[in-house]
Length: 499
Image: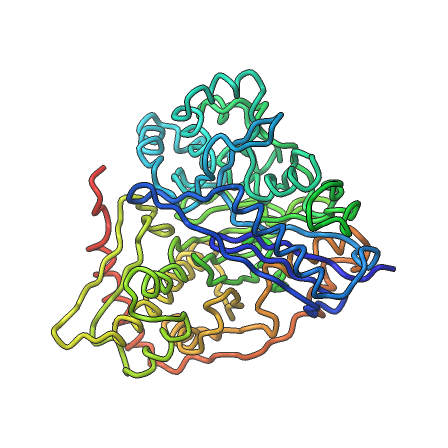
């Protein structure tokens, strides 16, 4: 049997393709970055064609490096940046506007109006989400309301909407489909009935004809069509798995039992806990989403989100020019024993859980004449850890269970200084896997399960290996004092932008 799976990992700043064998080992990979667009403060966009070009190039390059033949590939799995909204023409395939990225805050006034009109409870009850511009629904509405002629074309059935997984699948196969994990992040999907909700679509003026068909995460999404330049050898290979990046990482980390949790340190930070086959009725700052539907009934996860994590390190590099590489942030941070009292709140595009403040903005607090570049680098790293600690504290309080260990992954998880500080402020062990590409691995597992390479989700557990475990080394009193200072800094960043 053909024994390899290709995972397409379409992220916020780059597109990757990774080929895995049956043991979860990486055979080959390729990655290409693409341009970020910031038309106004708080606005973030991507060119959908850049997403396609970089993802297709990554797929072709990874396949060429592998030395495999098309017949060796059992299936393709897709994982993606979630909530990013793309609207395109059904006939031509041309986007009507740039992709509005999950980080974008332009629809905050729409969310505020919905809450003031009493719609917040209905959104929370149906979707498991807190009303916020983070999610796709208000982004679709913005495009239809602001692109000339778009609403009329949508109401005539001429336009399609999709999150990035859907956009990729449509261009690879011609099928307009998505999966429950991505659908559950649109603010239009009923997570218990597992279908698009007519009332929410009416509330946001989104024609239901635009919406894709929702298929199980491990299933048939179509086959690679003919005529895609550079992908000729992959024609006919099935796409058999898809999931939003954070749900894919939860699976890739082997968190298949209720109570198991992970945190991904990427452009943002995302903490997810498996809560089993019943969606909780909570009223906290946590979100409830479909984790996956792979073996019958859906599995749910609660989630807390940090909007800017790795992006704050990129900010030091690209906007301030204080470092030339991400690793240099670690090197400088290790040159000082602490931040010298400096706190960095990276609320560039608002604050997620537990604050949910779209009007917060980034801030540096505690700067003195003695503050050096190394202090700022350390403050950025520690700011990431503080935000994750806030999420864990809320998650434990709302679920009533203590997290014994936090499994970690994502680009910034390779930072030993960040992982040790995370263990210190959490007062919990941190477990970093041998394969940190757990997001892509989760997508590969879904596709491989559907293709028969693995017999069940339990096989995931046997493939995960720890690379290093970080134990808390800080006194609890010291950790509590640092967290108190962090919360003072957060209060100074909140509600900064005028409504």
